[in-house]
Image 1 (spheres, rainbow, N blue to C red):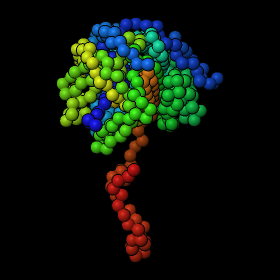
Image 2: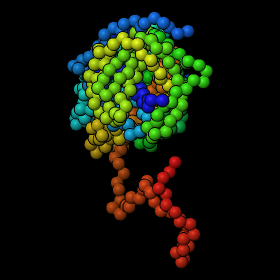
Image 3: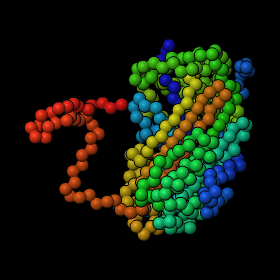
Length: 434
């Protein structure tokens, strides 16, 4: 079968340059255990043609924030992606978590956040508040949940203005916790699990011993297609050409050759499948044969998706798409450093004095953990994401002058030898590991 590559971007990316109107805000997730009390809380086959999609509505957009958001989403995708490996990110979740973090930054650190996210603190706070409100209730059968929280260790004294901004603009809950206690990890994971309806049962394994604050975001979306897909027959599969040249045979779905919102783009084509909330949709774009996914993505900018949606055509499409589940988790530090946030991770240069005070030393970002889950079936999609930014207190340990750094993270020789005569009893090379 014709080589197929399907790119599914995170749901938040679908509305990067274009957003929509206001809606009621979702209430924060309730505490997962009796010990997790917030210190403060603010707050079958259809035959008819699809209804014409309305022109994209624009999210409340202070000073061009929507384009800045879309730029960051694409930059993050490209920086976090490894050639030939699947990735799934939620720029929405990452922006909300980093947005709270940025509210505690000053000086050059605040300038770095502004450069990476494309917004100053005031604009960022206003835009994040708009995101929370706008996607809190989408209508139709859609289920959504966007929540934020701060988990503060006793070693950190948070500044009141920082807390108020997080509460007012991000609707964040504030919890006190001993972050070195395993029970605190359980509480954070329980909070995320509840917020994501169980799709992400664990996001944190443990906190760094120097962690004094965890800024946590969780998002959840469940959407049904306005026109469901079908499975042509029991056990029907389609060929899928993997990046490494192998072929998989996932269960496939079809639209029965009906009218779809067809999208055409330089070196690619695809569709957008509206959900029944008439607001969001699933974007599927297929690079032309002979065009690599890397080159295809390199040509995207913040106007690409809005341009695709504006230029959509109602065309009869023979659509086949695999039914799939996807999960991704990883550390975003390297990607964020590459985008320009290196100083925020370095205790020698980070300036988070607006966030609070710790007697043990300066504050800096220790890690930015991100986890996502996504499922596509005939009825629609279900997606969740969580982002945890942990703030460390203290300087980096001094490196001894005579320290030798020896990391066996590339091919090496190993064996068993006779220490008296030097004879090798076993000898080999490790050049590839599963």
